[in-house]
Length: 355
Image (cartoon, rainbow, N blue to C red; front, side, top):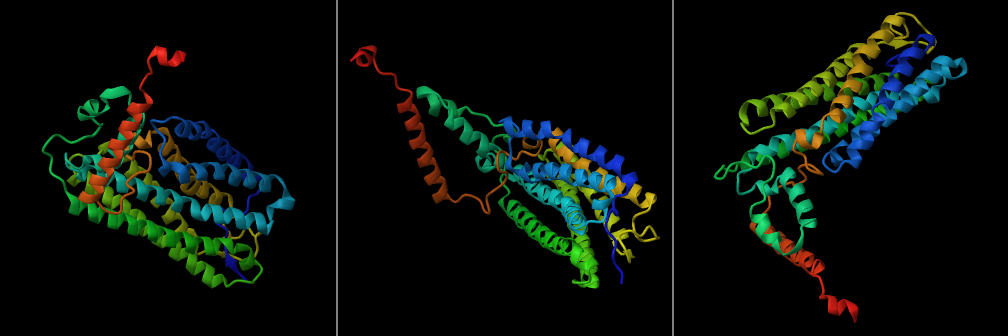
């Protein structure tokens, strides 16, 4: 009986060094993870998935190193199944973060001068500034407050373009969830596949469907980035280059997986052609799968995502633009908040404090 070969193969002694190298490389990203969450100017919820992934990869490569060094663990179906699941879903998780990032990147330049306060960047900065305003001149100071990226006075608004960007990026995110479910189902049943309790053909079909769908969606992300770069004059150009670069590296992973996942083997211990256990197969895995993932995470953490992509704290969370009624309600709430700030900062006369 044959079954789909494990992506990356089963770790042998030659896998010990590269597994340790990648575990240490991801460990070196931990200070950046901590810094991004502690630094208020770079904190954004859009990186939560990326940060969890970076931490999880330390565990994954540590387990591969353990399997490579310990023969009793090398062919453990439980460990192999866990590692296969993590490897299968990692790059799709990065693509999901990209879909959220590109949504904010593309919607921000569609706001006009009158509606820019609704953007992810301005809204986040505005709420923080209001919460830290001082004394009685809050309203007067707000009139002169300028946000980074604010368009010049008289810049027209493009609500229709913004609406279609939101529809497209939300559709991308849902489709990536489908790809995650398909890939997770196939990889999560690896142990059952080897033991003959789950159809190998079904698992292979799910793996192809997951990686094929992910590749198509990544190409859509790259295409949307190129469109924004060419047709949205106020878009953050460097942000577009970063998304394009990361998206391209994720495509390399998807193409690699589609190329090798048709291989089958009759034993985890086999080193025959197609088992993905040969040294050349392992080298290709580390170069075309593990390395692009690490580079993508490093880029997302090394650059200030909040600034480069104008994400603010939570990105573009609106499913539609603010209505006039909602605008009036928000302004009323902010007025009440400013009044509370003024009352909080009123100083009682010294005589009153001595009573």
